[in-house]
Length: 200
Image 1 (cartoon, rainbow, N blue to C red):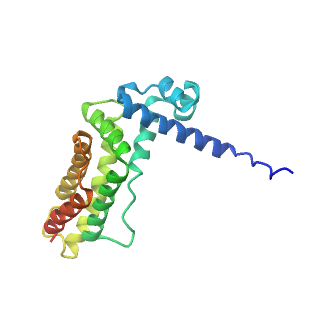
Image 2: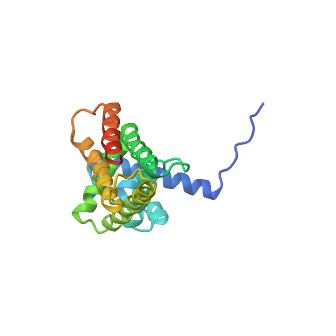
């Protein structure tokens, strides 16, 4: 007796699998050896492909880095659509902190990429500048709603958004430097208290 025939994967499925494996390989290379170790040859070898396959899918180092940055940033889920204003800000902050807790390796890789962007990596800096601007804008929009409904405690939305993103990015960087992971429950409660008090 024979089993059911194996379904052949579509070209789109094969492409998605190849890209997933390459991005996972890039995370491993960075986590072990740093951002400077990312080459098409090194990433391709780790993923089990030739460097030509990596070039075919991502085109350039910047293309690979952009896809990697977006995949890491996509780990943080958006706050529920029905939330807005103060509650949306607090929910999004907590989701970000929960992601840091549950994805320690990817938190380290993201922090390393972010630090390289700050240092002026020509492939990474524009990517992270754009994504951080979007992140700040999402908080600023919610804070404008909070100001309109009286729960914003008179805060300037743009300044407060910059402070919140700075806090979250800073926590991520600290997690790379500390020897022992913090008590995330207490950390999340403390930050919620700080922000909740500030938002009124």
